[in-house]
View 1 (cartoon, rainbow, N blue to C red):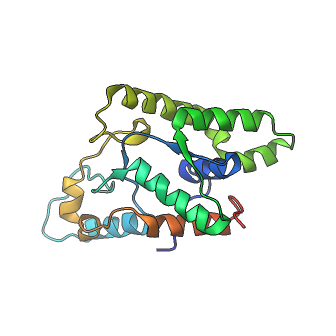
View 2 (cartoon, rainbow, N blue to C red):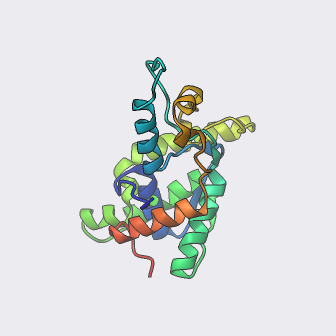
Length: 192
């Protein structure tokens, strides 16, 4: 409920770099990110389930993925409400190119460069996401594809064990607002 999400994870790193280059990465496919409180409560539900044989594996991924572009639109709107200007969404490969150019021409210390362009710490992973996005673009049908090249997980078992997971609301603006507020409070970026 607090919006806490590790400040060194890949999503806040992408958003931090996006603020520095003035645009957000657009991608094909969907995301099934699970807010921390939902994940924790679904684990508690599973561990306290009575009269069931627990499976060896239960995927606790969001059961209702949303399009990557919808989430990026929400990030753009949230950032706009705080900073006064909306970030445009460009292709993932164009976004990556802009980050690489801006980071390589940055004149500060290495630590300051990583603070300003945190996604460069995970550049090989970002490059992999760009390749995956290009592959999805070439196929055109992305209805059941997860953005960034990750696998779509079957949550049927986990949903049967956890009402929290089964009834988790779709990701949307309320989640994004909490994440942006949390990351800003932790110094990932400054929007004011």
